[in-house]
Image 1 (cartoon, rainbow, N blue to C red):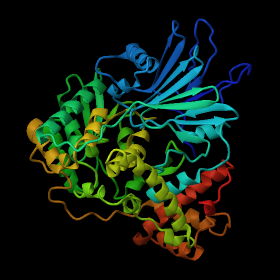
Image 2 (cartoon, rainbow, N blue to C red; image 1 turned 60 degrees about the vertical axis):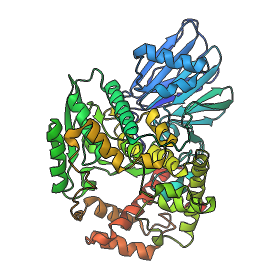
Image 3 (cartoon, one colour; image 1 turned 135 degrees about the vertical axis):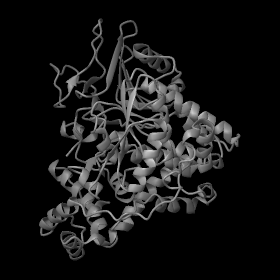
Length: 563
């Protein structure tokens, strides 16, 4: 039901006079550091056996620091990097942390000052949830293990569930559990005694500058190249998820030039056209390409296509999970963030979205980000309206933040879709192998907000190739060249399995009580008979059934009508 503990990290405030240490997270190991002067521990810390964790204690100052993930810095490495991070926080210069590249959580147990700092990466991509349980704060990288450890109450966050239902992911700051919220992006969160404080360190610079496009692309290539070198320093082997798009081919060129590192590119085959296009890219830069064929259905590539996000809600896996499993333990390079930092997000008219009046912007963006394929018509009347109301309120919060920067549409792209949805592409395989995301650089994110939308178009990417990677400039993007008609997916065994299980549960009154039995019976029976037009309905209902079953197993009371 819940995410595995192999790569998780958890911390909690120890009870006074609690006796011998007891770890409530089975499958993890205690990694709490001890100090020579026996200063009281402020945070008990445990980690899974595959967690990428480094730690350091400083006897002089009395702090103990833990870093989950692998941040990089152009001037600091190893223990020196951890000491530098701690120094910036302790001396009141947290803004310097934007120089770090990568996804991470930094935990500083400042034992002499009796406080604990939690710092996530600049956009808070690495998941970290914070809450209180029986008078103590508890934190961790995934909420289901916290609940199963007995460190959470039984209350569900219906705002989070409503957003998940409507958008396909939860874009609120909360989680499935009412007790736990996600660490605010780009902040230093300090727990002292019974309370918390937050200090923002990653401040965006709003603006409408129009520097020469050549300057934009030179900065992009320079920053991505530097980040790539930092991430791959000392690596002997790497994998690369390669597609027919622009972003992964930039990384393919950088990987091919990296001395001392052997990189193997992987493509999950959808069409013969895509294979031909990607083969040209790999051949031009000199990378070996391995094509992973499907049987016509991507769902059949997974034993179970759904998995829980760190916030506890179900989502489908992505093909990067399949690529990661080809070489477990070998870092996987991907183009996460490449689209939004180079070409914008959405249609060429995106900048016009900002010109809409506020009362029109919220409903427009709510509809714009809605997950395609919803089948609320299979549920009781009024349910969709209630879900949309919660979804609209969650979007309103993000738009209000984005309006302060003059770019609410762009803000929702970064801090909703990218932070919560697209990041699933690599968060899902943390237990398998380390992700490398060279486009996730604060300077590039800030550049998007400081400059006009027109600076980031298809022409920007095309100019980048002309100036820096001319050997790939004539190969069209998979969406810009001659695109063949889409291939109709083949039936998936998953659809029939899901339909059969739901048909067996239909007679139960406690199974999806908001469901129209008559409509559902027709669609689910059709799926068993191989009708392709009902696949979307089965997928939609499976999401609901899966969440309901997880909550029932955990004995957490849940009422669909409370949404």
